Image (cartoon, rainbow, N blue to C red):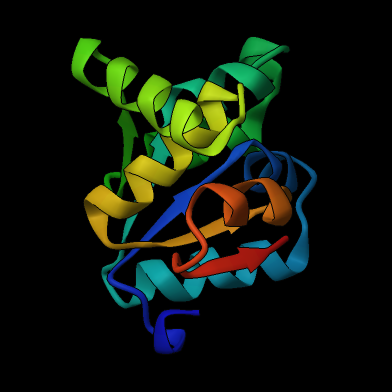
Length: 130
């Protein structure tokens, strides 16, 4: 995982679910990352996939309130890039594409439960299965 000291982490929906479920391994990874002043990025589409209970999702809300965390928006440029990436690889999950492109943008390690799909889109990215 980024030499075990990544400068940034990008979280997909599976990683956000692990946060909400208080997964110890993911909690440890995030704690260590913040101790090293790593930047944590949450693609907006991944957040939309898991945000269901609003204020009752306390762990996730606390993560999002952390100053080390940025929610990366999907603007027109990103939307087009996601569509093009899917087109090049014969896939249709634009949220997975947004996770990949966000990981590339920040040169980050991606925490994912969807290793096979992300690997298809970007075989050389630093992916960690959650």
